[in-house]
Image 1 (cartoon, rainbow, N blue to C red):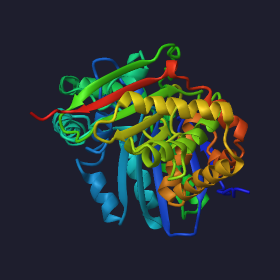
Image 2 (cartoon, rainbow, N blue to C red):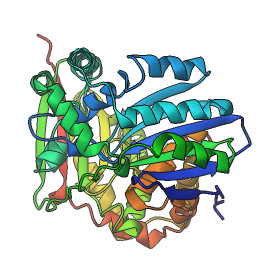
Image 3 (tube, one colour):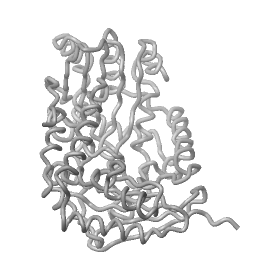
Image 4 (cartoon, one colour):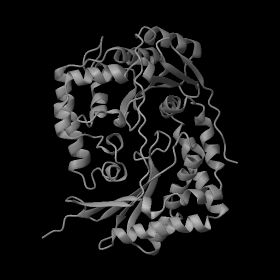
Length: 430
């Protein structure tokens, strides 16, 4: 029997619409504080690619009562750590600090939720920072953007789902303070956010601090959440490109999956399927492609282009990627993947194979919420997307409830004709 966590979670909502999730855990003298906003890469408008990520940077550049970089200084001065990240469907800001610094974190997060310092100087500076990040992580790196930036436009047709979330230099440079102000007003309302706190604190005191620091933020209408669904592909779509820095060819494939919220049972079966195919030396594709036929040096698979299956709304995908050995064909690797999916759909898998995979996934889920900040972020996202932060306790057992028949049915959802794929070709030296 897969164990279940029993994190006690309390929820309430302020008059201005801010949702609050609390998990008291006195086992360590730390507290994790996360604010999760319902805005991500898919929310940015045409002509402003990369803007959601750029705005995440701007949120660290000062606020109503704090000068630039003061947020960094106050968190680090308390002995804490901090960061933020932009995802397809949300943006989060988080910090871990000793328990006695909780009120300081309440003040810092409330201050920038109320009024970040959006100036021309800050904007220009952070545009340069983001452009340098793109150079380091995409343009000047082997396999940069593979497959998470390269594959979506092959799989999807609409701008929200297909565009480059890191952004083009032209779009970033064209951004204005007016754009930033409008983006803040639209998406950074208190009613469009969740404050999540996990760790060693007194619950009554925490509620008082939340009311004290966040309660005075004026209510603004939360942005109407866009529906990003689009028709499933009916034909296979493939493209390839030359990567001048790549030392060897690579290939990635993606298939649309059931709605991760509205079709959660089927979606969980796809989560398990991805691991059956790629998790560990005994997985189907590692055995076939790496160990037996030696076509690839490595192969991996996951749901969602950012690798976490439980932080994304519909539509999303099963993604498989492999780095090929020299002179191997991307087409032949894709054919092997198709064969293994067909074999799973026709013949299923053994109970022992399923048990091994289910236990590995459940173990990773249990381990992933040990740290108070990881728990705070996960609770915040579950509240934001599902209004159910308590799902954090149930996920391991829900994975354990997926059956052989569920995985077999999931494998049948991914025929070759619905596949999108990309191949990376290394630059041929002359």
